[in-house]
Length: 364
Image (tube, rainbow, N blue to C red; front, side, top):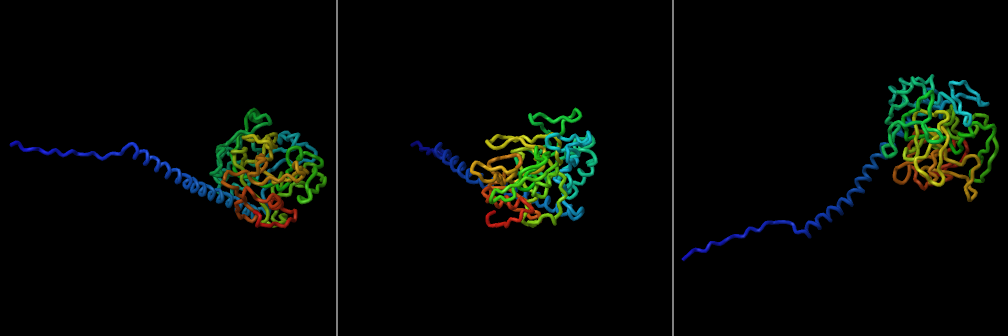
């Protein structure tokens, strides 16, 4: 009798197609849930880094004032009250901006651990001098926000047409900044900078204005701490350092800003279009304002005020790519995060330094 040999059938374990699809779906859901959390953590780190940068800038301003008993000028220009200047100053006939052009952030370099850059600069020469070419294209990490997406690299100064501005047959390239200084509510650049007189707001609540003599002196219009040839002292900030914005963000996603200063005849171009934005004068390479300015009213008859990320998206306003708002640095060196929905009048109040408004911080 033949013995029966039993065969064991070995069964191999494997996923069915349905099981595989279920696993893939679960993994996709988990990744979808995890990715926003990872992005939020990364943005939180970038926001903290930006806050630290602004803190360093605020402390640098404090140390600069302690050393020189004043703040650095918004930018340094040959002073004129009639539109004349030496040929080497290259005065702009429209704005009366002229050399040497060095801005507030250039003055703060020794106080933000960028002494090596500062020592290479010839500040007795204009920004566009060949002797300054290597220094003015330097990248200063303190002046760059990690959330800004428009680039960190140096950029070419442009004309009104968008072409490179040529001086002595050479284009002018400067280092980038994502931080700007406050000119206050009013702006005095462009044609205002060369005007004999101008209209300015005296009361943002009643839209009251008056005509003032300018004659090339932007300080007769500016109500913020930084403007052309400003020499602001802390004692000039009558509204209080805690209640006055000194610095803020402006991402290169909207327009190019520089730590170097202002080049006469430059025009700052927006990088994207909206119904309200457009090119503006060279002063907006380093400065912004809050509005209202020049007696301008919106279609409802109210003064035009544009806080951080306001949808005018103008090259002369603050603009941040942080979620929900942007960073500002006050005169006392404190750094605050301002919501996109900040009260407009509060923003105007915080932007001026000597208008005497009463600040209600609960509206921030």
